[in-house]
Image (cartoon, rainbow, N blue to C red; front, side, top):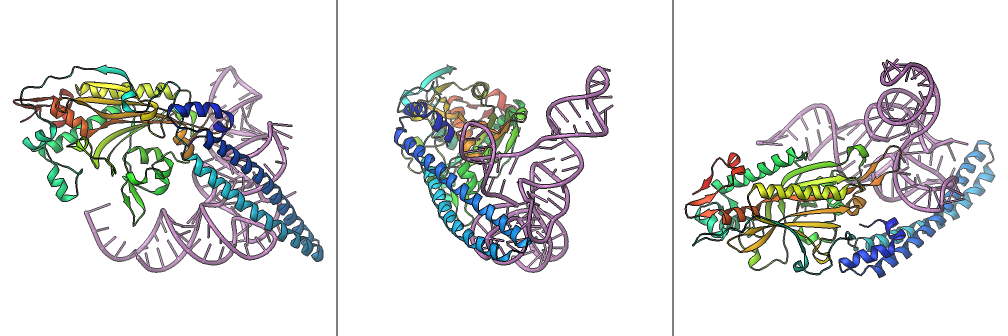
Length: 423
RNA sequence: GGAGAAAUGGCAGAGUGGUCGAUUGCGGCAGUCUUGAAAACUGUUGAAGGUAACACUUCCGGGGGUUCGAAUCCCUCUUUCUCCGCCA
């Protein structure tokens, strides 16, 4: 959620920046500001009425002490009238605030000024590319055939147990999952991230604070009996650790990482992109989260970007980094880098990580602030990224490393898998 | 799941209807002293709205109520603790 003071002070800048996301902010922001004036005026009136009521109450107390009962009763009547009008104003204030809030939550984050204009993924800016596209041997197969051939992942069985998009990993397939998770967690810990193991169900308040609710409600699995949501990413519980928290400036940056399964309903996704591991309802991911000083958050973003690139390099996967254009960015992000690895048998790039700076967009809803010395609390910047999501990495590893003799495991993973070939 | 107790500022812990946003201690910050530090002493120290700055308003787990007036009384929800039951 955008900060009201920002809209108040830099409305035109906000409108210009939101135009990069192809969002016409002018009418909404103007309405928000109008409501803001209403709100302040109403609050002022209410405050002076309450002041009056407080004064009367004190006088009544004094009069009783002095034994002047008749005068006290007089004042009590006066108080009743004041109370009636203050109640009315309080209600008006509440509805103004609600209306304003309703509008504010529909406004996306203002993108960084370096974000390229554009509407579709085709307009994302390819900022970096590394690694050679592998040439596969004759008879190479897509991963969904390899997983069957080597009995690594059983999609049909998952379908029986739960439904489409819930695969069952078996034997070396399961071991490869565990290896990747441990590899990612070890690397993150070595890079200074504190490992967190959060709950994978969260309450409504958490969903709201990181922005999954109310707009993306249909994308989360909802355990209605207890009104809990299955997390779509570890970002939700980990970022919510800092909801309503004021940290000290010298604690920044805060670096957390966590492995969790992630659950996504993926309502509205069809077609060949959902084949095999490309799009699942349940998948595993290690997430990295940072809370940074506003002056440092873009340095932090670059650091995270370098970190993710390092992981892909170690896994020997060809990858590229895209700076997302305004139209392809998420609602909450100010700047996002996507990482894609090349899937050699599918002959296409697959998104495996997304690293974003949210600036104060999340922290405003979270009320996540930091304090410098005796200064006033200031909203911190939040950032997060996948490091990494497993399924598409697995797809690329299987496809790119397949040989007539079997599938080769990258060197860095061998200590974790305990085998160097899947035969 | 049953019975009882509790929820107050970063922490501990007073406060049971009237200058209580809240005594006090610890912690934090600033200063005095010191070559420096510690100790001691002095001062300061919650958040939100509002204002040019004050004023002013709101917040004592959440919500509602009683009252001229609520941290204090009532209702309700949540959470925690103790005992019992069940259990990976």
